[in-house]
Amino acid sequence: RARRLADLLDGTPGIRVIPPETNIVMIDIEREDLDAFVLVERARARGVLLTPFTATRVRAVTHLDVDDDGIDRAAAAIRAAVGSPS
Image 1: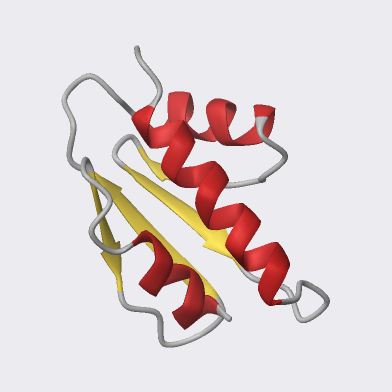
Image 2 (image 1 turned 135 degrees about the vertical axis):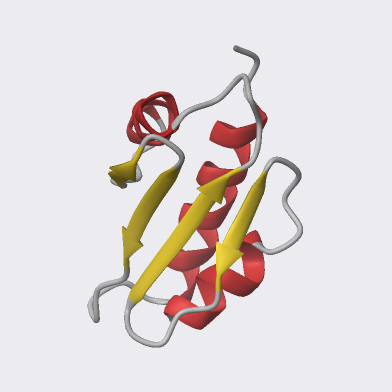
């Protein structure tokens, strides 16, 4: 499911997704007007919990109880959070 999340996020303008080797997806923020802490708060407001790893990287951890629909919703929420105006 981490690979599914990474695939769904891949190509989102403003972020770069590190291909996962485990259930952890690392997301690098490539926009100057967005940082990890803002992205985490925007995602939280949409029901998705992320962890700031550095000022420009967040960590998403998939859980075995989250099904494909949940992954799809999480990806949509993260994409929306990245695309939100500053």
